[in-house]
Image 1 (cartoon, rainbow, N blue to C red):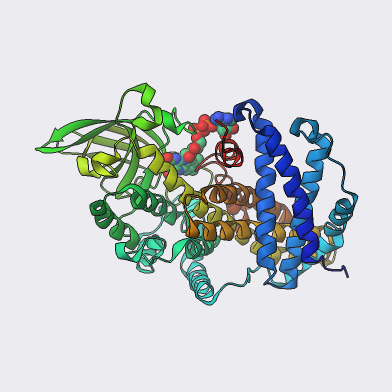
Image 2 (image 1 turned 135 degrees about the vertical axis):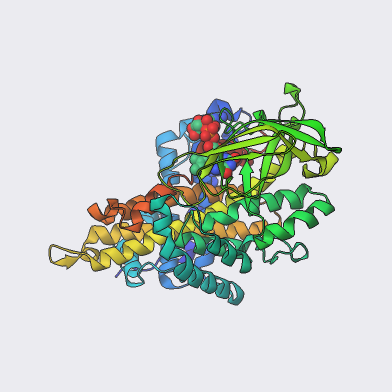
Amino acid sequence: MVEPIPQKTSERALERVERILGRALAHASGRDIDDQQVGVARLADLATRAQAARDLLARSAEAGESEREQAAVFAGQVAADAEQLVRDHGPEHGLADEPADTALLAHVREALREDRVRALGLRAAERRGRNETPLDELLELTRASVREFGDSEIAPHAERIHRGDLLVPESLLEKMGALGYFGLSIPEQYGGAGMGNVAMVITTEELSRASLAAAGSLITRPEILAKALLAGGSEAQKQRWLPPIASGELMVGISVTEPDVGSDVARVACRAERATRDGVAGFEITGPKAWCTFAGRADILAVLCRTDPDPAKAARGLSLFIVPKERALGHAFECLQPGGGRLVGKADATPGYRGMHSFTLAFERWFVPADHVIGEEAGLGRGFYLQMGGFAAGRLQTAARATGLAQAALERTAEYVSDRRQFGRPLIDFQLTQYRLGWMATRVAAARAVTHAAAEAMDQDERAAAPRAAQAKLLACRIAVSVTQEGQLLHGGWGYAEEYPISRYVVDAQVLPIFEGVEPILQLKVVGRSLLPERP
Ligand SMILES: Cc1cc2nc3c(=O)[nH]c(=O)nc-3n(C[C@H](O)[C@H](O)[C@H](O)COP(=O)(O)OP(=O)(O)OC[C@H]3O[C@@H](n4cnc5c(N)ncnc54)[C@H](O)[C@@H]3O)c2cc1C
């Protein structure tokens, strides 16, 4: 039996991490991030893990013993990472004279004892990986009902959709719409449930546990567009677009990326030019777009376009349009407008994240009326900022998607290592299996804690908490990749068989650190920038 680590001891360890981080960040101040990318990425990672450790510790105080032990182990690992930063990169981060803290090192060794981690693995196996983190009553009810929906309505179809590269069935969209899943954080006055970000992440997590692509990700796009509309739409636009988005009557696609423009969003080139059609004033959209998920089935696309051709305007020359189109259910489509507009889409084949299809698009003089610019005339030139605000909400939702997927991998793996026998014993009887499962459970708990805490912070102040959402996305997506791969390994050869869902979880997880800010961009331009706010 290992002695539990007192919470105070973990808190002291994290204070030391804060001190090291504070010194390293002060040292990095005053220099351009691009001149120190590797160092800033390292600090962004450490700051993110430290945030997760604090969140996990705060939450575990109210939970059971194994949750408290997970928090102590995770905090111990973050403290070890900080000591490693001093040891391996001290001079680079202005920490050459930082003395080693022998008491802290003793704590790290105690926290990271292998028998402590193995005990967590055994506990996870006993629970068959289930997430029973305590919640308040209303959220508990939300989680229970979405979990039931995921198990009965989504999970049975997930494998078929993935293997057949099929579109999510209409019946599922209808049921999700009726349950209000597309409008969870849209205010009630605009037809949403007005439940806020915490309920949204809990719902997303449970839907993604059943299927990342065929359920949890369906609410990303409405979430992003709704946030952009709430931040920058006119009152008439909010009343017109938010209720049908919340009810699921209108499915949404988000179209920012172009074949030659990815992370450098300010350079979006797809243009929207003023035009009049049938006496209606508006814009014609012309140009290519890439990776527009769900563009075929979507009824409306939020398209970021250049309305001011002056290259010097960069981000200030962009506007965000709501672009209606006909539904198309296949892997390729062509839509035509009576006045000559054309929109062509072709899905790009992907190893995972199937169910919505992601399309390369070509707009040719595609007409939209002037009141489809978010913010109308006043919204011209504000598209970049509205889109980025939408992405902040999208990142929180993606952190929840990642947590749900990692949770699914934990459950399948806990079940597998309990049931599978080798050398005459269940796999979970082996120490190394216990240890690896213990780390899986701890990482999933950290992903959940950082995501839920970011959601609470977003409910307080969305703008101020945007870096917290980015940190949650950064960490949870990385955890989803590592936990799904670890789960696959613990399944042995069967983990590579399509017949076992863990093989799907692995390919689904790999996309998570790519979209809504590919990992290096999040490290440098979102999290790094927020840690060094005065820097260019
Ligand atoms: C399945 C899938 C679905 C998607 N769905 C959507 C969608 O619905 N709507 C949408 O608009 N987009 C979508 N995307 C696009 C996604 O958001 C972009 O792929 C992502 O933003 C990265 O852009 P990129 O692919 O052009 O990579 P690039 O910007 O070319 O970056 C490639 C790599 O270059 C490096 N890099 C780039 N810039 C820097 C820098 N300044 N400093 C250091 N390193 C750098 C990084 O290592 C980065 O990983 C989707 C993508 C995928 C794969």
